[in-house]
Amino acid sequence: DKGGFKHYMLKEIYEQPAVTLAAFEGRINDGLVDESVFGEQATAIFDQVKQIQIIACGTSYHAGMIAKYWMESLAGIPCHVEVASEYRYRSVVIQEGTLFVSISQSGETADTLAALRDVQDQILASLTICNVPGSSLVRESDLNLMTKAGPEIGVASTKAFTTQLVALLLTTIVLGRRFKLTEDKEREIVLALAELPSLIERSIAMDGAIESMSQSFAEKHHSLFLGRGTLYPVAMEGALKLKEISYIHAEAYPAGELKHGPLALVDKDMPVVAVAPQNDMLDKLKANLQEVSARGGELFIFAGSTQDVQPGEGIHVLGMPSMPQILEPIVYTIPLQLLSYHVAVLKGTDVDQPRNLAKSVTVE
Ligand code: M6R
Image (cartoon, rainbow, N blue to C red; front, side, top):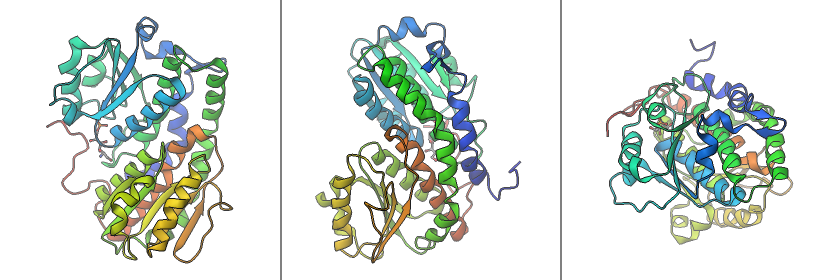
């Protein structure tokens, strides 16, 4: 049932205020995260963790990349992240005290499951962040945190991703307590989380403006997505969505890498999307965007401050609501989902069932 929406994907995008709330409500006690929701052995296992190894594929891998920034900067825990299809086929060094974290919407992705099985006897313990109760990854992991997004039907993952990020933030908190995260900081993050559903709602309200913007993409063959810090994986996720459902080649770069190669591609036929919240990387990002403009590239910027990032010739700016920095990667994902959705609709592709792809990749 598409609930009156034209596609499941759009319905699932619009469900995000509700499901991101479901992903944290009931898991907070007196302003602090209740770690027993991870499973009976949670406390005993978390007490022994020395580092994290995250494994996932596709969109779930992008969630893992964001979690790495959080684990290291907020929690002070060493964290590695890798796609399952590479990790499982190379010989890896697993350090003592490694918590193996798999992230998967379906819980059935063949490579992710195989990676877990391969390292079972070398790790401290396993935790899976998953959307499907009773799935293989859930059954085979020591600890679980369900993302509670509800069934995701569209092949392009949307609400599964944003709820994974909420779950990973909760995970960063419970582990970070044992490292450098203070109780004050934890309370601050929990308070910020409470604002998430309404911030997502306000981003969804930009739908009409994003739909207009999508016309500038439908005829193009290539595009570039830029971000820095936690917004770099958001750019990767935006590019994956565009490729997946609109069949337009899209590549993401951490903006600081532009001048090391991709700047040579930029011309008026290659739209450049940038996610530019008002954080301490903004000035650096603006300098990178300047390089794009100077080469005639057309910019589409989702900006935290329309005072700091101004529209101009070939520079389109959509203002995002102001928000706590921790929420930026979650909220800035929304306009990119909507952009790829509208481009795909304009192109007339099969939005919910893109060619050559399956919802659950159970073969390697
Ligand atoms: O079920 P999983 O999260 O393990 O699936 C991983 C990828 O196959 C999945 O995220 C894929 O990249 C999405 N279709 C992207 O929208």
